[in-house]
Image (cartoon, rainbow, N blue to C red; front, top):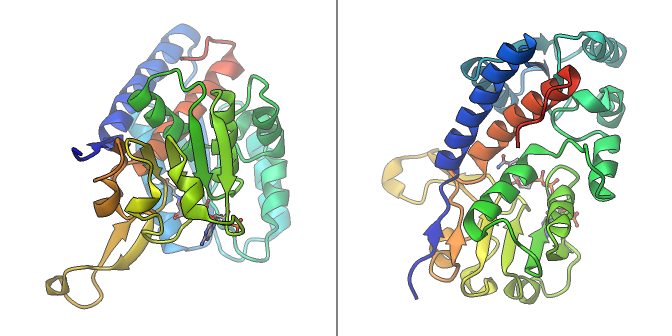
Length: 301
Ligand code: NDP
């Protein structure tokens, strides 16, 4: 059997970003509105700082306003709630993103619940989760599952009706919304997790397999149905395979054992370069859509 097609998330995300940039320019021309995203970072977590910087850079590249709020790690919860209130009331801010994780003394759910649902660029607010779960229009969809669905559709076509899909991982930010999106696309969906019995057998039935567990290379080649489409959401840092790389050197791997899976799957996302670039591109798309909605302009398809 030929090796799987490698799904180039980096190239797809670049195309999506270009379309978003066109949409931004069109909204400016038609309504005089520049989409703006407020990015709130509390504390000094190095990974969060990297993520936030790349989001801010993408906003500027696509012609949007980036309102950066980098706050001290000991910021009081009440002050963060007050900041959210100000951003909710600011008409130049169309989207609000609070970088997670927040410091332990802050109640994350309380903060996410304070964001106005129509400005919830990450789609984590219960109103948006509820709209998605009940299949109603207008939900802002979390960026990683949205990006994964776009890659699946680009690979298999728009019509996913009747396909068996297995989502591995049931987090609120990836697994659950991914399952709802696939259900809405008329797939027959299984949502698997750490208590699933005979996970390998469940995986083997799937035409579409989305892995979002955070366990390096857990999904082996013989768990995959021949010809399946495999979307690897996992981002795991592990020691470099090549001892010549030197001590302390690391590399990124997904939740799927890529070298094995590529021999069995029909199509597969690599890590890095698969789902990762789609997440930021979809954040840009969500921000543009929120600005269009606020301006009463048509939302780009
Ligand atoms: P969480 O830790 O919130 O959720 C992990 C899920 O995996 C849980 O539902 C858990 O089950 C399940 N799980 C854990 N271990 C096993 C196991 N041995 N067998 C079966 N299921 C298991 O992770 P996230 O959803 O936030 O992230 C998942 C991965 O995706 C991570 O690697 C993360 O880095 C990556 N990620 C990548 C993004 C991107 O942009 N590409 C964005 C977001 C995340 P249970 O509920 O039973 O505990």
